Length: 108
Image (cartoon, rainbow, N blue to C red; front, side, top):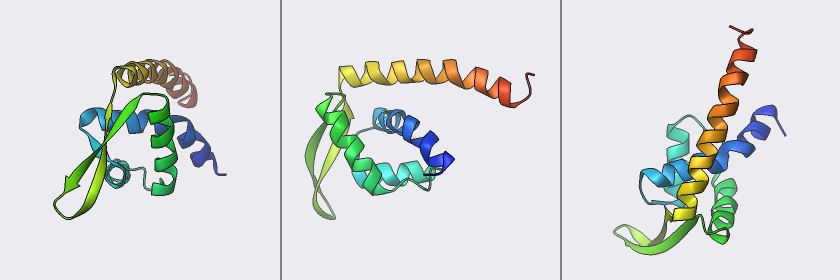
């Protein structure tokens, strides 16, 4: 597993929750959004297990919605617990990001 993959594995859940917070989203759309934001190496196959786990942890709920262009799609949205989990992720991310940025920039 590459360094990028290892780093991404730790933050992908927070990225997915953040995208879902923006608006209810279905799995393939999540994949496209991640790519639009520059995470081009995230496959759909890695997204669905995370969505399943987030549902089991009651951080998101999924609702089947009729699609105009094919079969029904499962749209995900955050629960209250998901909102709290995302806020916690953002807090911890920011508390790690700043010192790491300082360190890798040579202490400036």
